[in-house]
Length: 227
Length: 227
Image 1 (cartoon, helix red, strand yellow):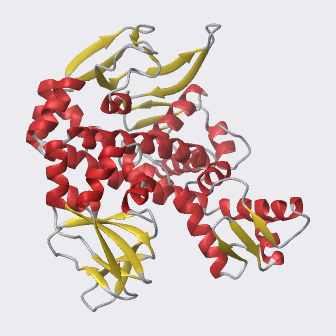
Image 2 (tube, each protein chain N blue to C red):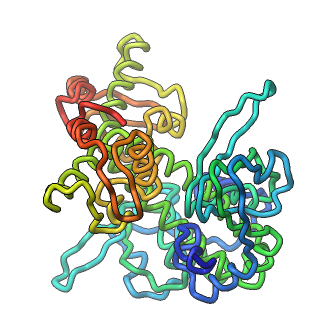
Image 3 (cartoon, each protein chain N blue to C red):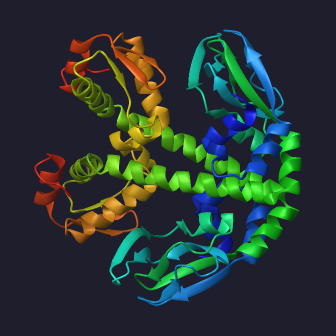
């Protein structure tokens, strides 16, 4: 596959125009790695970011005792190290080819120069990422709405138990942390709180939740009712 | 809440530095909308994008007969119209305040000038969005791994039935479309295909899937086995 054709398939670069793909292809270099070959080490200066064209790349950390902790395994079309490189940090972990791999390298300096000359490239990338993020958020919401309301109801009832069965409970963690605990994102958690409030099950005032209909929450927690 | 404090809470701008927040605040204007007041109409030039500070905003389309189709309801911290504005398109839908709302407006032209002067702002935003996208993708994977393998197994068996019970089936849609149909994203779908191949249930060759262990797929589809 040639580089331009490949770039058009990378979600990070979706929706650019032909000229922008050409410019990216001009600064990109094509690299081959053998199975087990290192691509970069943690702490190396972040001189550029990568996209897997074929093969597989693992991103990992090493403990003090040399034990390996795999953070990610990336396959075709996936970028890696781009966030660190955009910010200008050193590589935050090690990268190694898990299989014979072809990897596209985009040097940071040339990428920044390109954005300086063509801010629309950055705007297009921002637009593409932003749209993708909204789609992902919507999918998370659809996937979460099956179980997260039940888990949230169970959590609120257990908080109430811990707080001597009172109807007013105070969330002990932030809503962002609670979203993580329940396996969703803050946006979706907020919508679930709103739905519960509209259904008359609770009322909310910042981190203070008042249980209005304990029976309904109980049914929700036991899967006998849907939100 | 002042504008800089608000901007630090917006995921789109997470991880910027103090100076960058100040610059954004300088180009932003604070707007108030009454319940039911229009913010923009479909087709208006995309002169800037918005973030909800308080209240709620609905984004909707109108059919030829005037029937309203709500696309999104955005609440505090959520940006809207940013993708269209980044690309330079007109507003793709109507926006109206659903409740008394305070909204931050960032004019496109000033935003582009800011990025011209400070490409690091765009890079930081790209980094933040990119990290957030990876987190979302991981969460989708965790949420999907519960049910998507079962649905994929059922889909493969039904394709085989449609194709005279043959062991080799050809996917009739792209993997991106299939991911959408199964309620996940292409990255996760690929990983599920890989896991199925590693477990010896199938082998894959582009859109051609060969069923290697029909019984295992059957058990997966019936929830009697996990991947």
